[in-house]
Length: 95
Image (tube, rainbow, N blue to C red; front, side, top):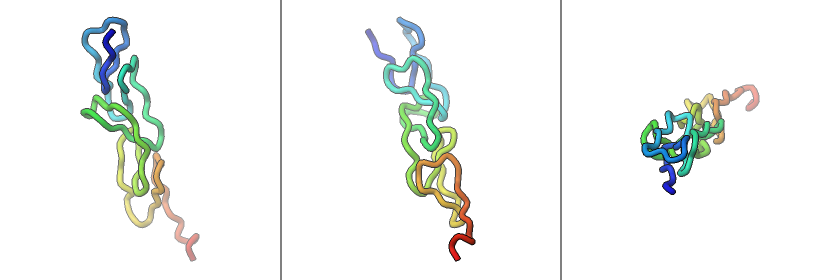
């Protein structure tokens, strides 16, 4: 039996042509029968944009939304990692 390759899914037994996973908000590990939604605070990697293979947690200084890693926008924001949205610093907390 053939295993569906990374970045693709095979939703029917005996498929001869695997389907591309889709977009950056989903990923397909080897043997997938359907795309998996990326978790909040994670981004997808591996393969082309529509053939993502796994998800990785957003590191410190970055945040991830819809499977895309983005750099923290500046000194007025705080990105400790594992975020899906940016935290704005409250300057009055540091007086």
